[in-house]
Length: 260
Image (tube, rainbow, N blue to C red; front, side):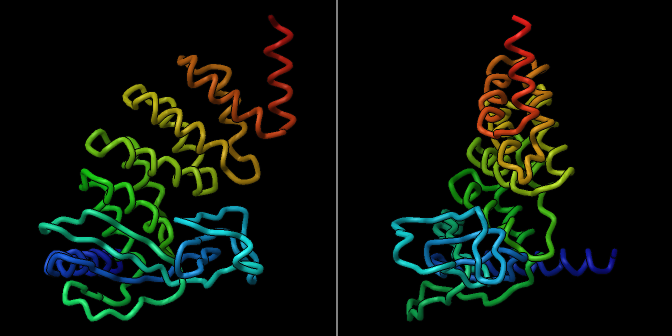
């Protein structure tokens, strides 16, 4: 365990150093994606995919028409990340899944090739934590695509950090909500209850709870709707419970309405 951690840190340091040494322009690298992630190599990335069938989560970038593709327009990786570097700083992060880089003879293009997924995720999460601009917000997304990585502890730290822009915080909250399971649910409810977290971030956490699979966030939303100190947060929880069609939510509405 210790040896693998030391190796991962060494690899990450190498990637950060290679990016830092690259000239201004575009810096590219790729890495393996976790199971269920696929993309069309251009402007669509889907989640929970299985045997060529896309899951319920799909993200599209730019112009995309479902009629343009038949079935699931997906390849299961790799994730391809393009960093825009200007004045020695990363100013933009673009992410693709599947496909291949277009050949380019641009001297301002540096291709670092394939890197270990854990190395890529660590670099991207560190970039999200230290970048004051859009690059930090955009770096969160590719980090959660990485194979064999458990990102939610880092996402929780980003969501709680007052040193990063609000957009980066909210991106971390959103992807924390996609990390299904008890651990993610616990992290989101801790954010809602934390008095040091801004109201907008709390409301983002409530939304993230509403997006958990198999209605895993419903019990937490019910507790928030019943007990949270902020009327705004309670109202958000009730709104998303109303979208759930869960009988537990209906029981709560009946309880609230009949006690008036």
